[in-house]
Image 1: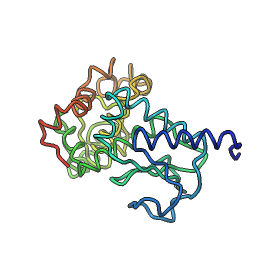
Image 2 (image 1 turned 135 degrees about the horizontal axis):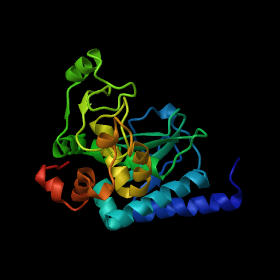
Image 3 (image 1 turned 180 degrees about the vertical axis):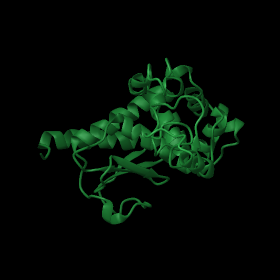
Image 4 (image 1 turned 30 degrees about the vertical axis):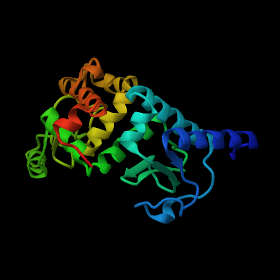
Length: 247
């Protein structure tokens, strides 16, 4: 259902505020900003109020968590978001974020997760490498394949090394793991959980008493985990300095 004129006006105001205060640009034309995404995937036209408000409220939530708009701009710079015909909620690279126009829509966790990917991509994926090192994990696709071949994996691929990447995560992941889990997704989830710890907590509750996963995937308080400390350190300069993470 199309927005009313009143809703369109509100969406425009929020879009202008995003650009003015946070340097977040909701792209309306394919030629506005250069992107690595395929141009034909981008949908032209003004953003609907629902999606605009989700982005606005998420960015606000992030700035509160990390210390204000100046900190947000320092870490993310100019940030374009586009809408496109994709079959999943969103994707991201160093140029920005592309969100779906499908009915599955987006939510705050989605935007925060993809912002984590943008941040990582702009450091040439070295933030996720540093997270892996900080938590004591490692990646070996060969060992992971051997583990699967020897039938030492669970059907869901949640155990360390049983994912497609052979990612041997250490410590409980922010919101669980599956076959597609790797250090890049780990970092994006760690960032999203830093902003929305209550959502992350709700996602690991199912593992609290699980016979196979409780010791691997459950935590009582995300703020007491290594991943929270790592993201916190990034925003406050500690780990950027420790790992010599410069763009």
